[in-house]
Image 1 (cartoon, rainbow, N blue to C red):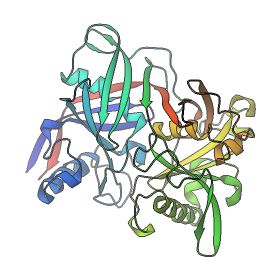
Image 2 (image 1 turned 180 degrees about the vertical axis):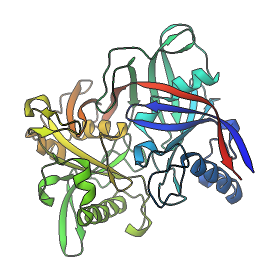
Image 3 (image 1 turned 90 degrees about the vertical axis):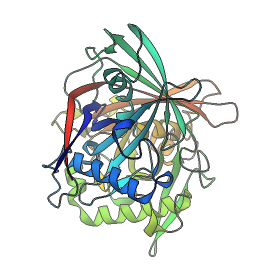
Length: 391
């Protein structure tokens, strides 16, 4: 029997996902720990079916997913009852090959689509003009501020902001993450150190474990015989590299306090990122990016796949890491912390991804932490209607 559920298919930054009004799903916005097992099973089954998982062929042809982690996502949104907050939302990362849904982090790219979806769904209304919306993300219990231009009651789509990895341009959506440190852990540096060694068997690997908007395990590409200029397909084709990075990531998860042992590490966080000094690189579209156009090379991995660009939250976390003296990012910048100006001052870092340069910024607070991170994205509602779920 087919069940039809109201939904929209929305692009946010370099991600796409199915977005739901919380009232349409079993369990609504609640995180798994707050749900009865049957209710969680029902909701996860809807999300997996909507995206086309599990798919042993890795293509999600029987759903709305696209066979990549950045295209296998869902957002659940509701009008907020919290004082000063407009919308609450929960992010769900749907595994491709297995019937699993991970709620361990937020998605910065798809967060830019929350307001466009909510306006289209009638969950929030604003007059025309540039409007600020305050969002609460349940996954991280953090606030996100989104600045969106409203035209005729909807989020404007036409504009001149080009996002690497997305054809054309769109209206900018400015995202600010206040107080982003410790999104899932004890703080900005969960282990207390800007750099440390993670052991896999008899080898030690350098890593910075940083949590600003999302936890990351940031590693120097050179330790793996790489430059961070490699293209995603080449990285994905190296099964030995992928297995090693996953072991390092899981040990970083333990050091971040996200799990007790590597075997129980969350699927979606921490993400692991290869970083290297700026150098000339060839992009996915075949064009050449000069070294002078970027500050640092980055190759993030999400759910075991090399990302085609960079997760939005990861871009902001890397911007924060650039302000931490002695971190893998600041070392790759060759500045040893020169991107760490005084409190209240914002610095921007240009991240050379496989799709082009992504700019993200961070601002320090009085105690040397990170007061906020920021990123500009574009978003567009691609489809609205009902999605078919076989029950």
